[in-house]
Image (cartoon, rainbow, N blue to C red; front, top):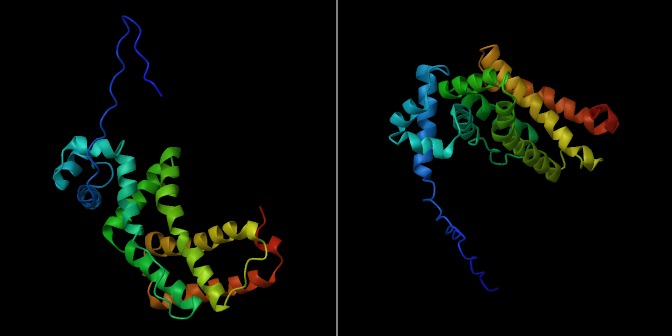
Length: 225
C-alpha cells in the first residue's frame, strides 16, 4: 500500500511511540512483597504508595506505571500469595486432594501478610464495587481451577461420575469452591481457630458426603437458581 502524502499545510502525523522497557519481574516481586510488609506494619489506612516504593527500592513513578492506586496494588499483593496454591501430588484419593488443598489454604491464611491484606481489601470492597470485582477476578476466580483439576482427577479414578448436565458443571464447581474457601476463611479469620489436620479431615468428610449425595440426586437439587 502506498503512503499518502500530507496535504499542504497539514501537520505531519506523529511517529509511532516506541514501546517502553518491559516490566521487571524482580521489581514486581519486590513491590508486592513490600506492600505486604507495609500492610502488616502500618495497616491499610496508613499504607501509601510512597512508603511501598521506598521499601521496594524503586521510584514512586514505577508503581504508578503498574498500578492505578493502592486498591489495585494491595489486591495484586494478596493474589500473589494465593497463586501459590496448587493441587497436591496425586495420593490416590479425592479425600487426600481436598485435605491437601485445605491445609495449604489455611497455611497461607496463617501468614500475617495474608490475613492483613485479605481482611483489608474485603473491608474496603464493601463500599467499592470496582474493588470487589478486582478481588473476584484476581483472587477468587483463578483458584477455582483447583476444584476443576481435583474433580477431573477424581473422575479419572472413578471416584466421581461425569457431570450429567455439562451446562451446570461450572455452577457446581463454584459451589464446591465456596464451601471450601468459606469454611477455611471463617475458621481462620472469623473464628480465629486453627485449621489443623483433624479439622481438615472433618471438613473433607462433610464435603464428600455432600458430593456423594449430589451424584445421586436429581440435577435440580444442586442447581436451583
